[in-house]
Amino acid sequence: MRALGRWLAEHWIAVGSPIVLLVVWERASATGLLREAFFPRPSTIVAHLRQLAADGTLWGHAAATLARIGWAFALAAVLGVGIGLAMGLWRRLREGLDPVFAVIYPIPSVLFLPLVSFLVPPGEIALVVTTAVTSFFLIAFTTTHGVRQIDRLVVEAAVHYGARGWRLFATVLLPGALPFIFTGLRLGLGFALIVVVAVEIVSASRGLGALLWLSWQILKVEDMYATFFVIALLGAALSYGLAALRARLLPWVQDVAERR
Amino acid sequence: MSLAVPAALLALWELCSRLAIISPRYFPAPTTVGWVLADRFIAGDLGAQSLITLTRLAFAFALAAVPGVLLGLLMGIARPVRDAVEPYIAFIFPVPKIALLPFLLIILGVGEPAFVLTGATSAFFQIVISTLGGVQTMDPRLLEVGRNYGAHGPRLFWKVILPAALPAIFTGLRLGLGLALVTLVAVEFIAAKSGLGHLVYRHWQMLSTPEMYAPHVFQGTSTDVTVPESSTARESTSGASPRCSNSWRNMRAGKTSATY
Image 1: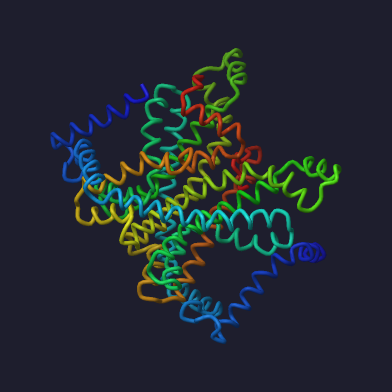
Image 2 (image 1 turned 180 degrees about the vertical axis):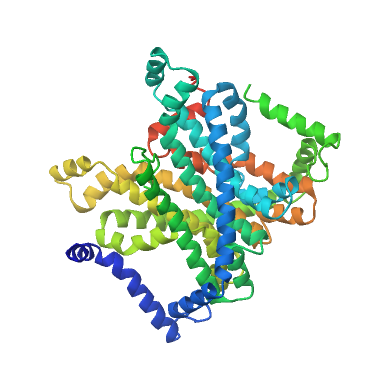
């Protein structure tokens, strides 16, 4: 209790400012200072959120989005780490692929949707593959860099002590690259969320992005706010959850690009 | 070597498309795309559409950079401001900014301000966070030395804090520019009736594939120019320390050739 009190004394502005904002917003919409059609009261939004959750609509859409992110992330992680490691280990492969990647990578990911929908059956698979594209490049880049930044002295010492082949890889190269791989995975997951919402807006009938866009098209403003809130929660859960997970599972691994 | 692989891929694509091994309707030969690209650039509207996208990018970036850097610095030096604003930044930063588009559309109406502001928000939060990080991670010894030599208030800010934060500010600006471009193209794809993103969407809907790929080629090759040092990801992954980002740049330029 006392710890809580001290924490509150320390952070009272951080706790108070959102509360004040919500109260002011509520009053301003109620009195007509803000147009309620555009800025519905927070209490109304919460009511709509509860209703969306109660009739199951929200869970269906959220599950669709989560499944897409999950598949896309798995695809990007496996291919990205695999190809990234290979590119870090073999110079020829790296020199061959680097110019190709350098041209493809900067193309904004939504633009891949048409191309991907020609390559694979349009629909769910196309959405997942499009979502995976940018994450894949991110993960491959960071993994390659992770292998390349390992101190040569360490590698040479290991080789002198007789480590080569699989052993060199598993005991020196992979652990050395792990912090970078983890950073790549974290950034990749973040990007998967960004892209999945965009492609859902463009061409899906299910998913949080689709729900958001549909609510705007039929001007259900309260549902828009409610959906946005859920997307924001998902984003926070993914980015802060993963950081906490790393601290728990891999305490020795430093994230090389921790939010700054 | 570095050009051999892309050239071989293009040749393979050309061959497969010409021999109709892959459907030329969906995957037109690179020469066809190149021809269309050149033709549309000279005679058609590719140049004009790119200019529209670039103009939006310029406005979005300007709208994000100035307030972003100012707020970031203010949060860095004034503890109450940081406490008051940080909850919102932390809440909205991981949200895909494209999800803000419907809100801006209902508040501002369908038009340029909504498109540009959506792009601006994605850059804004990145710039605030990088700037704040730059102030927070500066070497405390610098501050102490500055104070010991009698620097206070504005002097301390201009001579010590700002210069120390400047590298992080520039990283934030660069990342922000890249993010703004990605978001803007998605916005064009979804809602706007002009710009490169819309061009791809329109030609996708009409299945005029050579025209559809032309903006891809344009984006892939020109983003290196529009976004200095290219690629947001490479920066965000390696931006943690100048050493890392430099080694990545060297690697791209093929200066380091260590093989493990």
